[in-house]
Length: 317
Image (cartoon, rainbow, N blue to C red; front, top):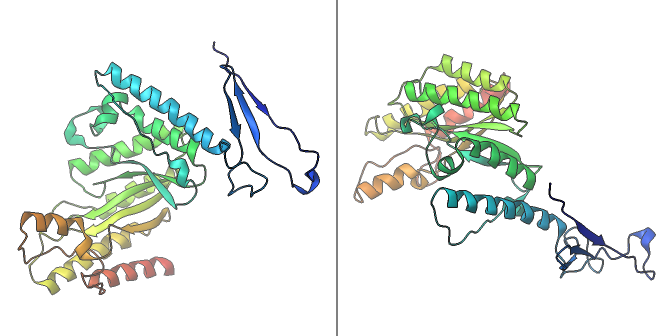
């Protein structure tokens, strides 16, 4: 078994007032190879003149050590997989620790059509680590940020076809596995890209929400919008059907107390990814998608009022 040592040296300046906290926090790290590194807390934590701006912040060093280990592990796995890595850059999340409401730590881990065991989505991380990449990602994120809520985000769970059913079963299984492994998982995000072309069973979806809640996680309804390509061209009729679809979905889902957050996938129609796709397909298209609560002039649409009613109904209940 290897032994790792480092010597940390700090000495008080007798001319400073230690009792009042007026002393330098600058210190040194010495390693067994002979390297000595100046260290000091961040000036955001300890103001001048009691810190050394040339010293390494121990919290940054902690994040860097984790990132370094991850990088070495990744590069070696790439080598074993026959991949050549020329460079590696890791902008670690420790920079923004505690500054956001939540992180989507892993997004869309499932896609049954890829035919992978367990219904997982194939990709470079799955190819290198298998489904264990999910647990590893949560664990590493937990080392960098202990305050922000950690979310596992997934799409298509509202669908009541074979794809949606497989994804729901996979999510429940994955949540169990992460919880059993002691991984911090605060919430499951369920993307709300409502697509009326696919079947949706409110009762079975509510059962799924309750099953998630029973596992001790909050539920976020994320990426909320309504795809309208199966609705009439007439704007008034289309807006009414969009609002009706959304209100029914929200009224059902928000009855589950574990549902804490609704996040729209943009707010105005002109910013929707559906609009981008429609314009790329036909730059002269006259029928543009209207999936969001505000129109392209930032005016409230029937969807906005439907969402407001659903939120109010939940508040009253």
